[in-house]
Structures are given as C-alpha cells and as structure tokens.
Image (cartoon, rainbow, N blue to C red; front, top):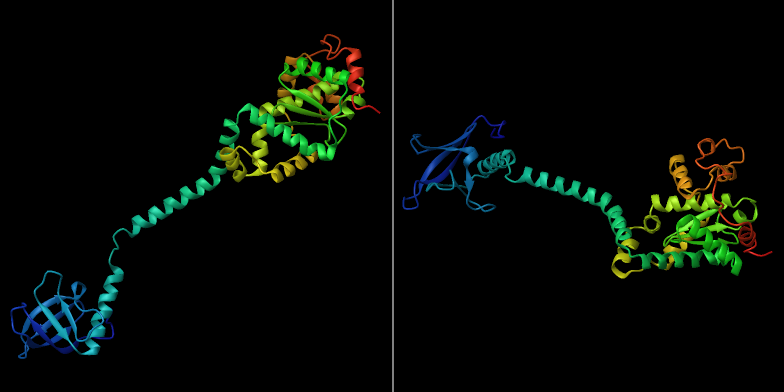
Length: 337
C-alpha cells in the first residue's frame, strides 16, 4: 500500500511540534508499512500518523513540511532527501488510488454527448431536407421546376410545340391529371419520361411518335405522376443537392445554379424508380386507362410486366378514349419532321 516494498523500515531525523504555539522538537521519524511514527530522542513514541492521510504544506520546497490531516495543528519538518522521496512516492500512489469525484460523471456525459452528436449528424441532414421540402410553397416548387427545365433544355433542346399539339397536351393533362399538371414533349435528352417539381412531366418524343395507341403515352404520364406522389420531387432534388443546399433554400429561397445543373444531368440519364404493380394498377383504374399497352411498351414480351397485363383493371374496348384520333395525330406531329 505504501509503495515502499524495498524498505522494511525507514528512519530519519525531523523537527516536530504538536501545535503552532509549542516549541519545535528534534525527533526521529520512522516510516513503516502504513504509518509514520514520531519518536522523541529517548525512543518514546509521541504520535502516529496515517501515511495515506499525509498532506504536504509546501509542495516542491525543502525542507518539506507535513501534517497528518487538513485540520491537524501538528506539523513535521523533514530534510532527509531519502525520507522525503519515500513519503512523496506514498502520497502519489495513494492519490492514484483515490476515487476522483466527477470522473465517471464526466465520462458518462461525454459519452452521452458523443451519442447525441452522432445521432444529430445522422438525423439532422435528412430532417433538414424533409423540412425544407415540406414547407416550400407551390410557387417556389414551380420556379424550381422551371429552372430545372431550363437546364435540361440546354442539352435536350426546347420542348416541342405546335398550336394543335399544345391543345392535345392540355387535353391529356385534363384527362389524366385533372388539369393540375403540365406535360412537355422533348426532342431528346431523357430515356422515356421524367417529372420535375411543380407538376411538370417530361416525355421523350418517341413516346408520341413510335406508338399508334395513345394509351401508351398515357401510361407513362400516369406512372410519372405516381412517382411524383410517392416521392416528393423537391425532396429528391435536395437529397441530391445536400443539406447545405436545403439550408440555403430555407434561408434565402434559392439553390445554387451548379447544383441544379448537376441534378438536371442526373435526371436525363437516371433510370425511373420502380413502382409496385398495385400502385400502377390503382392509378390506371382511377384514370380509366388500360394498363396492357403501357406494359407491353416497357417489355414487348410481357414477361417483366405480366402482373400489369394479367390484372389489367380496364379493358381496351370498354375504356374511355385517351384522345380523339385527330388530337392524337396532332400530338404525334408536335415535334415536326
């Protein structure tokens, strides 16, 4: 316990007094296993001190002055280096073994803060993005959709437009989306279809030019609308742009142009998110559009879309026409030669 295993007994001279008012006395100091004993010159013990309780009054100075405790009036002055070093080793060993008040509390506190910080780092970015997309007004959504369309236009070309073709698109919007969206046909740049914030649905010209049945293009419009309802288009944009862009959108109402441009490039090459058959079938049933033409356009063998074909909720002969023949012809020619 005393960290003095090399000593069976250590003695040295010292100067001791019982109280500050008493005269100092020359004594013999003996250090044993756990106690310090002070003897007079005749070898009679004057007092016993507990080694673990010793306190030094003048750290680092010589001669060293000790007391048996903080409230004791006694003090002991030692000059022998070997004795002082031995006692200091005891005091250091005792100090290391003392319970440090607050250490466990500090460890627990730091550990808790680390856990909270880790949770914040994992949760905060997605929460910030969800909040930003959730509070964004419709006018700002439409603005972001227009800006993305501008970026796409630089690569894919301007949306196709003719007066009769535009009228056919408006009729498709009314027929399939209740007049709450906006459909644009692009000369290229996207695989088949995509959707943007603000209810904008983009179609590749091949969808209106390569098929005889308007139910095919109607199916792609319904599928994109379903994707937009399942995954918010603004949140998808912010997931790509990152939490700092979401914070900037909240504070300034803007997203850096370079992030929009990068996301536009991603949209033009991204594969569409898969949709469960049940979601698509419900959407086709609501719109009174047969699902089979769309299913065969996705996979001409029907193997990958057999669920849509076998559970088609609308028979083609019984379905309400998607467009009149004249309007479909006008739409097929919207991009010209």
